[in-house]
Length: 276
Length: 276
Image (cartoon, rainbow over the protein chains, first blue to last red):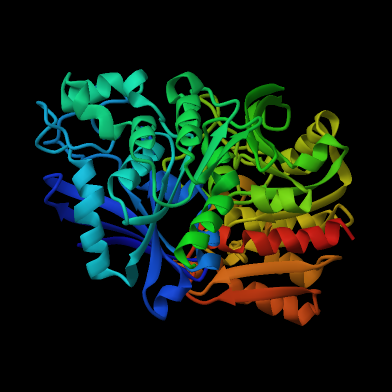
């Protein structure tokens, strides 16, 4: 593991690190914010999964998470959104290939050799983090934005007992019925839609639900509402009687101005579950 | 004036606007955050002047100012750092020309026709803002980072009664004795150092001081300490018995991780003066 940078931030350290990833078969970069409390011993960990076109850096610099995390005494990890590099398959579209891993293990050519973000987030990166940093891996929570909200919800529901709470900002909520999903899931997983099911938050919510609290924030003026399909997730949550809160935020769009506005609420929500 | 974008943020609006600038002889772009309270009537205005290489956008997306401004009911304007465009003089160096206006009115070729950031910030932009937005221009304060801290301090001291409070994050504190200053002041203003005096915060502090509270934050691990020369400003403030606070922050560097960490303190500081 290589240290790219470390900056003092709200009394803790905002670090950026890279490492050779076995899951993705390339070097991967991630950001990790350690609050001041980490100097005294292991702290809980909140995962933040980013959206289409993002790297590890976007949320780290624009989501205003660190101040809230320092106050709560929680670490935040900011993984990248896909494998990267000259030897990694790509596509001209912004929503397929590098920057658009969709948090799945690809089974189809040309993606299968590197696009294994599901295993990277669920297995490889947690092992590395628990090994190298002052983190209490028995206390994890997960959130994300857009494609990252999709990743957070689907990973949380597929790993019962792993995450104490899950939240999302404007998640891609029903990708198997959306142009933000159908093309990508076909490309990565093939045309058999059965293989898509655990990668659709609304389907997983209807089928499995989440054993803990859920918080969803969605901007009412989001320019991508027709692609995100929040109504499907809201219905699935209510039908299942899922413990949780779904908030439609008047006037907000899809940007980091929306994410940063409600980041404090999300950190507080996860802190309630992690520090209970 | 043209609206580039408007995003809901912490209940208010983060806007970006452009206009034909008479002072700079080109189109200029600025960001303006209006807190929710602006919907009820004019609110006080905090200026945030940015540093070398920045545009209007850096602090708007990375300084985490909006949440604090919304809580306090204060607007924040984020001007650009220089004139820009194909017809505007430039230099290959990152610290001269476009992105490096140093908040002066240039008198020398090739800079004089456009590089009039002093007049732009002190005269033209406030007139435009007061005319077009719900701002109480009788209640203004000013801050900035690095080159923008230099601008904030020098503009505040040169306009007694204009700003109720002034603060700075890691300001270029003594440019007439620094490589972040001597070359630029020579290029923009000429070799006669008398013309530089009002553009050196330490000189202006020793000579004029500021009729109100001053807050300076400086990172002790700032990689540019030798160029910033905070000790000269600290001495000038103490010698003058200037009302104010100078804080050396252990472990912090020059980045926006430093700025965002202390932004809440600065907004609270200015709110104390603006809302008194």
